Image 1: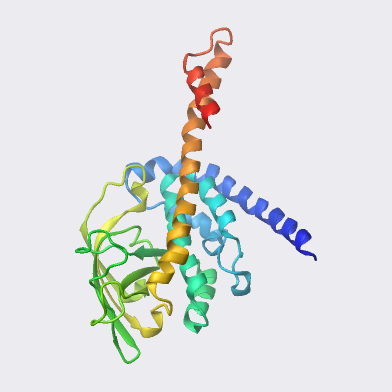
Image 2: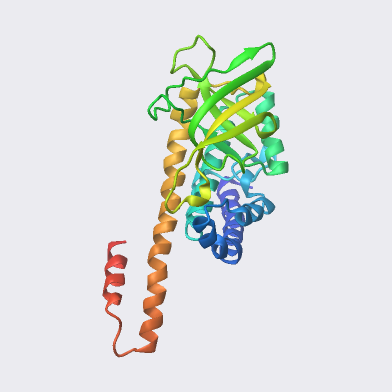
Length: 293
């Protein structure tokens, strides 16, 4: 198959993926969205459905068992989810950012290659702990250091926010690469939930995104030294985390904005059908929004 025909086949396959996301959005995700935000609860219904469709591994290369979608396609999924549930879209986006950090920075490391295969099989959900008390929100500065003894590691971090930490299967944690390293000499560690304790100590009312369950935690973990990513965090942040974050976040916000327009538009249309000779005054506002967009 030549490149052009192969690209067309991939687009056809992605059209099916997007159709399945739209169906689960209307059937499962949107009906639960109100209670997810009102009750500040994790959107379990949405992620059960996403896992069933193998979408948590959609960015994992096909050679490792994933769908092998590119970042543009992941953004389309984020946009689609944003129209049904803001929290679901945000958690999905943040998870895919961490998947991208592993995909692009695993090098020849056997552990992380194998972990991606496990993620495909088990549909693991990845969270991220980049914030830390005492650094003023600077991602490129850490107080916590990972301590390595032989092939074992230990770390202890106070993070003012770790979204959906209690629902995640693993957390990617930034820290100094050793006790004598500079604050900006950082690595990222894959902390498995089974070897981790989380003690909540702060809360955050994330208006519109309450389902992300973005609490602060004192995180303590032990594990194997192989769980430390081989690439410096500076490279991971600059080459993957930072650019991918803006792409997927911008996409889900577009989906949220589109839904914010579609809801009143449908209301205005219904009112116009009732009184066709006297359209509601709000119809003009909807027209103005359509012209701007």
